[in-house]
Length: 118
Ligand code: FES
Image (cartoon, rainbow, N blue to C red; front, side, top):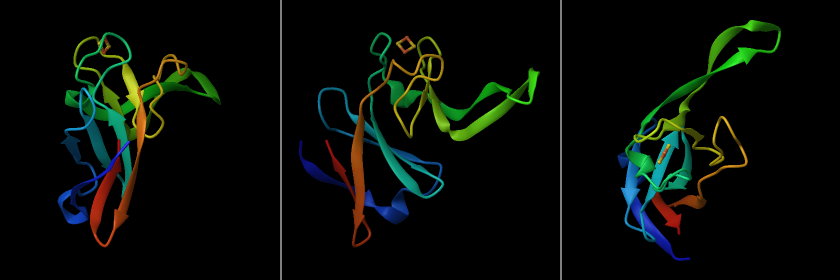
């Protein structure tokens, strides 16, 4: 593991991602509503470049109305470009099967600079 600079925090505004050359496949550093998260650019299914996936939310059944789907976790879900598995960027867990996950990494900000430890 190595702590490495990513970019200035103003260059990673909410809703954006920077792909960092780290490890074998790269690491995506995401700003979600002002909080930073990092996941491996490697899908837990068959190894697709996960960070090329579209970021949105997902759907789930409302606990109080089990016949109704609702849109949740907007901006936290990355959808794999190969077979559409969804992963929660904040935890690395697959939405449909939380025991499947992608690796997550530590991100911090010091003096306006974003750092990734990977
Ligand atoms: S490789 Fe990502 S869903 Fe299949």
